[in-house]
Structures are given as structure tokens and as C-alpha cells.
Image (cartoon, rainbow, N blue to C red; front, side, top):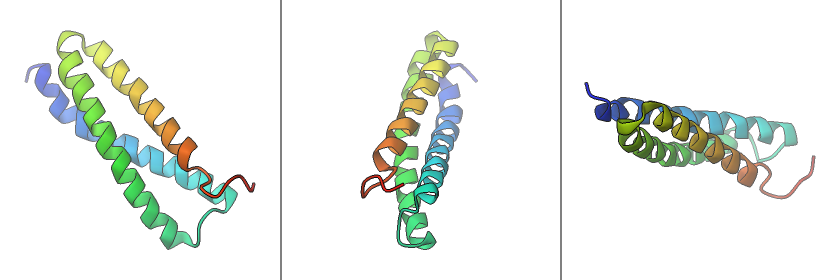
Length: 103
């Protein structure tokens, strides 16, 4: 397996991991501030939001590891990790409390 093909393995796993991490952090923020109607409504919203984040992160990881990682694997992994951290931060910051701050 060449370094360019390594993106096919890393990108989906890292993208799903980023989506799950974002959903878990958002769930913790929603529980702390008592946001939402009930647990099942929050779970469905987290499922859709987490899936969207996972798709976006998979594309990001695929580009970074697949293209940048061919020339410099460390730069590809660090760039993918930095982008994933920024995506999760923006995801949680935008959706933390949809109705404003009550807690």
C-alpha cells in the first residue's frame, strides 16, 4: 500500500471519529444547560448534526491525508487533526445553546 492510498483508510475512520466527538461534546453541553424537549428529540438532532459533521470531516481528512500526505505524511496528519479540532469547536460553539444562554 502506498502513502497515497493510506487516505482511503484514515479518512473515513477519522471523519466518523470527528463526528462522534462533536456529537458527544454537543450532547454534554445540551445536558448541562437543559436544552431541548426530551432525550429522544435531542438524540435525533444529534444524529443528523453528527452525520453532517462526519461527512464534512471525512472530506477534509481525505484531502489532507490523500494529497498532502503523499508528500509529507506528518503534515497531512497534523493538518487533518487541526482542521478536525476547528470543525468540532465551531460545531459546538454554533449549536451549543440554540435559544440563547439560559444557564
